Length: 151
Image (tube, rainbow, N blue to C red):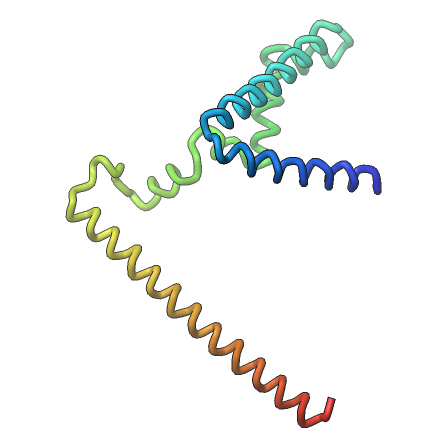
């Protein structure tokens, strides 16, 4: 387990470094990331082809076109990725709220939505202030209690 933890730590640090450097160059980042994604899926595809062609009983069936489709759907359903992968959460949520596409909204609707966002931001800011006041009160009580106990 220590080896896996060490390898994970190394790749975690490497990812932070590479992401930090590449984020300064989004065009280059896009090509490098896109290449990685294509090579990953190419590897998966060819591995499935090799397993299918090996003809070893159940591997040939599972990695056949129909078997791959069924296995893929089952994996995506089990992991909760089936709908979000193809449709996306924001589209589902906008459909449930019966939202219009931004391009179909009138200026009045956009201004109303902007006002709602501003109200939410104000509410969150007020809540943050209240939390800070409560934290200060708790800290002050804790300090008084310590002083009372002569710690």
